[in-house]
Length: 183
Length: 271
Image (cartoon, rainbow over all chains, first blue to last red; front, side, top):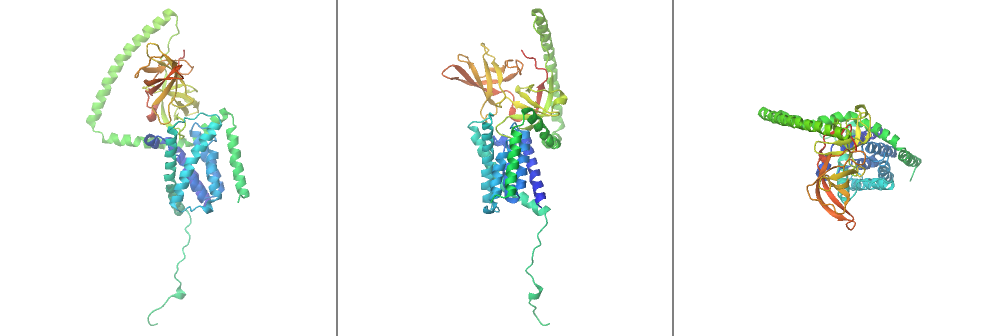
């Protein structure tokens, strides 16, 4: 199931990056495009292993940078910086709770673009920044926060649909059956 | 807490990032276009999805409406033909005068239509990708425009598609001329991240006499854009650096937020 989950997450990341580049409805409505990679990273970090987290960071970052004017590879480290610590400490996270998912999604969606811009500025690039960037950052944070529980639900559904179902144990035991009436 | 597997993952990701960031820009450009090529099979799907509402509208549109539209288009076409004859006569006269004075002859613009296939997913860049590439004769730094005005320039070229840097991107600077009596010159720079149709015009002379509504066109200086491409109109102006120079805001003529098709100028004739 782990391989299937990894493939599912990578396929979702591929489609998410393409969707962000092809459809600009959020940009027209709110002035900013929502990035779904941080939300996917949260899902990967809480449900899979460190290999999947690394693959998502590298491939997701490469795909994103290939379609953008970012220097190639600049998105990899921010994504990994979000996913790796969560993956290490996931036993402490109540991952089933929607509140935890929303909170982690918001934090990741806020942190990834901030780290990206920081790396760009460190590398001598001049991204388009201004007071409007604060609004864009808020939109990205809110969008990522809302998307995270939805992604969790979708992945749970996929896991149930495509994975082996655990055999449920019945509480019925024939030797403890109370027989009524005359034999 | 950190196991061997975690150390390996951390090391591998860091190594990949450092390697990629230290690659030469030419290799990075090729690598980007190669990775971007993975998305090619999805382009057709997007076009189909985008055309769905149009097709639905086509089936619902009554025949009388379509005939009326055709009539209007015919009338417009005839008007354009008459104007074209007048323009041709002016061009001939211009050529004769240029020949008399010994100036270089002007070539008619050779344009290629391109569809916009993708926009930059990052909020801090303003680029688009078009469906023309090296096989169509594109090279870097060709001007890109619409019927309304300047859009940007080609920044990198792949075999089948290219990246275009829009006028409102920080890496696209345009030398501009204001069509006022003084013909003031300035440099177009990006506005804010949320100001989709507004850009700033810097380095105008301190005594520039600017009025809202004045046309701004490319000046032909800078080596990329030919003179005379409409950029936009002056919105307002202010003095900067204690009156040393003037800054203005320009409303772009082309709607960069809703680009579907653009024209690539294949033979920019520079000054």
